[in-house]
Image 1 (cartoon, rainbow, N blue to C red):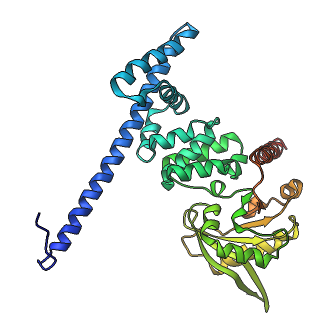
Image 2: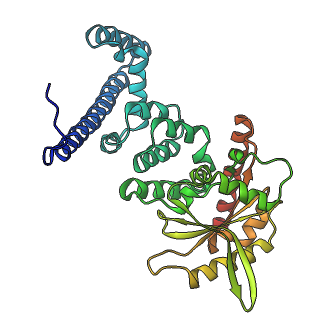
Image 3: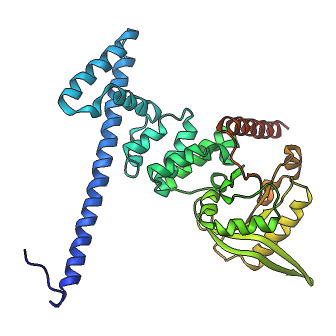
Length: 349
């Protein structure tokens, strides 16, 4: 077997180019196969589902799935085992629109779909599916986001259902990520490994040490800009704890860290920072800056009266130790119910 000699003019460049063409073709083949398989499984699931719905006998569904499985496994292999056929039916029920499935299948594999199927709420499934598609999450990343209860921690989940539906429709059709999809409460910062007693400076130091992980917890599109950014006003100096930029939202994001619970005076401090940034640092094509106040607790009535959302301020608790999953679920469920009740009360008044 003769190898190309490096001294031959253009030989190495030609080899590199051909290797790239082969690799690209293989990637495209993988994408095409994944798309075809995902659509096939959806169509199989839909067809079985429709046949069972059309039957008047309750036991017919059990019989037909078992019979189909035996025949298909014998002919096409274990990929069509009864358990997998039921997953395909689940898939068709969870995502009834073939056009949406076709779009998702360009980025999501069947392995992604299997991670989505246990989710019981439609908005929850759609959020994870669309974010996986747009952000190109791996199966592992999707699993981690679900395990961390990302959707339940977003501001989006605490909005009225009509607004959630509207924002998810925009995400699906335009790929636009809104602030409510990125802003969370609480933020899970157990990776900072902070002790029970720490200073705000210790918190900042820990964030900078674990900056990559912290950016992942903040959400898609964040990049670090500055720590303790100095602001001068009428001879007085002020310092922003941490300043970030989000390319998805096209805006600067201020993060202020507070050791204790939220206090009303924090609003004035944050408003000052946001207005200064809007006046002196904001580029012509950027949106208004956002502020996130990290604290260990907050009073829902105070947050409601201060109308922080109207001025671009988000108050969120942070957890330096991850609680048991059941405790987290209860906490988030209560937070969602409280937020929706507050919004409903405001609409009535």
